[in-house]
Length: 346
Image 1 (cartoon, rainbow, N blue to C red):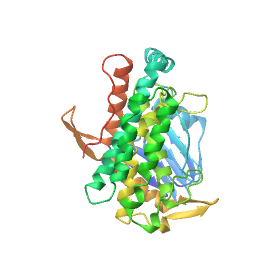
Image 2: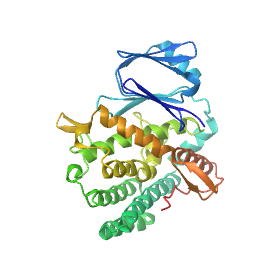
Image 3: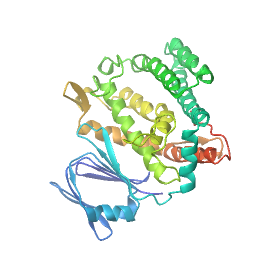
Image 4: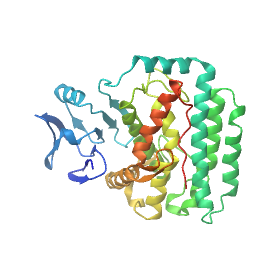
């Protein structure tokens, strides 16, 4: 098994589940021969570079061009988050799987209105199916969610009648609004009342958890795209523009119910995340350092957890499922096999 390395403010843990380095403390990150060295007020931590696939920086970290050159050679992306844990950008090493052919195919599908609409519809259909499956799971366990289930099913049933991207995104937004109305019923915890979706700033604890989890999912998908021939700048549901990656946002919509929301439900139900794990700043609520550590631990376990893949007929991790989703998109763009989105199987 591979080794995941997690650094949480001076605490280093090795778990046989992957290869991510999370840096919540502040200090300096530098190269020492073939080793990454994290220098903080608590001392030095050494990470052999062959044991690191990606780096997530939450603290105030100093680094230099020599380190970035080394990370480029080792094909290690670095994701940066601001003080509140929001994703702000990525140092994306030179694409080593870069394919001119695939970029042209992505551009072709983006510029062709019918092809783009078809692919965008598949993303939304996958997202809504997985929202429905989460609600059905809790309804089968006695939660009164019949109206929410019907609403999501209704929005999904009309996707074929929508003929532009804006209409698809509106339907997805309406279905997700209905889905979020189920959170208070599912959780039944006054300390984690949902009320309504709020982003910047998040107005309550559930919104803070959703925003933090979504940031982690966006970077997880982006890291997986790096290991394919796809270009993350060309999305289909989310518009391609000058400011950001968009393909990872498309794919993340499908996995939010299976990954982000399931982590949140589990943490709240088991009382692993509590009111003490949040701080109030700038008229919003955010996870504090302890809360982030707890969430990241649960996040890594969720990504590493496995399920029976019907196509492969073997168990795969959810992180691997993201990579497989990208491979399916590649095959769709090359005309080999129509893309079918990932479906939760409960």
